[in-house]
Image (cartoon, rainbow, N blue to C red):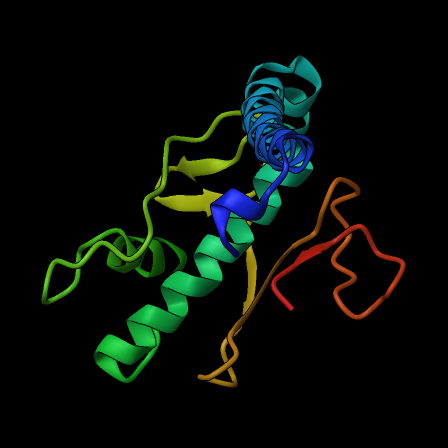
Length: 159
């Protein structure tokens, strides 16, 4: 298109269109930053992330992934004894690899107590290692009743 053939009115409309899209982009960026800040600073989201149930979901995923990685590295799962099992995942293995970082136990958060990794309710994690490709780990949940196959259960499962 020849610039000389564009009328001043068309030129103004073209310029308005460009300005319009610049404003839309700027507002989108500001809105995105606002959402990020609100999500990071909003107390409700912090409370949800620190709830025992959310802590358990994070831990069950980490524990399952650590078992998969350990199996890939060594071709077997850690020893069956509770303390030995978690010690090996924490780095007491031939290659000194830390497969699972475990903090000290705190009520409502779970963690390592006396060498055993506990869920947020102070119970041991249950594990089924019969399928090396799909190790299953679960917590008995808030009611502390192991019901992993009950679809209405409050258990926190890795599958």
